[in-house]
Length: 288
Image (cartoon, rainbow, N blue to C red; front, side, top):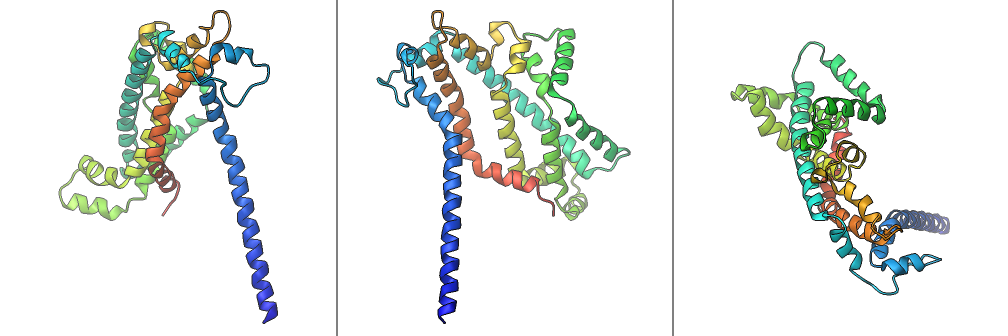
C-alpha cells in the first residue's frame, strides 16, 4: 500500500514538474514574441528629443506624448496611403479567392487529362525563388505599361499556389457521395461548389482570406518597386518617408507610431478570427 502511494506521489510530482516547465517555456516564448510589439508601442509615445537623447534605451517614456501620431499623419498623407492599401488588399484578396476556389474545385473534383501532372507542375513552381518571380513580374508589368496603377499592384498577387494547395486538399476531403447526390438533385458543378463545398470548407476559406489580407497589408518590396507616383503609394511607401522626417536624423518614434496605426487592424482581425484560422489550418492539413 505504501509503495502504491509512493508511486502515485512520484507520478504527481513528475506531472507538476512537467507542467511547470511547459508553462515556463511558454511564458518565455510569449515574452520573446510580444516584446517587439511592446518596444514599438512604448517608443511611439516618446518624444523625438527624448528618444535621441537616450544613451541607454529606457523601457518606459519619461513623458507620454501623442506628437508622433500627429507627425505620422502630417509628414505624409498616411490616410491616403491607408485607403490605397485597403483598395489593394480587398481587390487582390477577392480576385485571388475566386481564382483559387475555381482552380481548387477543378483539381479536387473534376477529371481531365493531365490533371495530376498539371498540379505537380504548379507545386514545383513553389521551388522558384521569389526574387526571380519579382524580376519577371516587373518586366511584364512594365511592358504592359501598368506601372503606377492599381492593376500593376494587384495582378502579380491574384493567385497563390500554397493557398490553392490548402483549399484543394480541403475540397478533396468532402465525400464523393455528396457530389453524386447533388447531381441526382439536378445541381451542376458550379451549384455544387457554391452550395455545398464552399460552406463546408468555410474555415479554410476564412483562413486563406485572413492570411492573404495580412500578406497584402504588409506587402513592401513589390509596391516600392512598381510605384513612384504618390497617388498609388501604400503604407509601406509612407513608413520610410516618415522615418526621414527628423530634420537630418531618423524620426524613429514617428515611424513607430505609424507602424502601430498600420498594425492595429491586423491585430484586431487576427484576434477576432484566430479560432477560425487554427480550425482551417488543421482541417487543411489533415486527411480523412
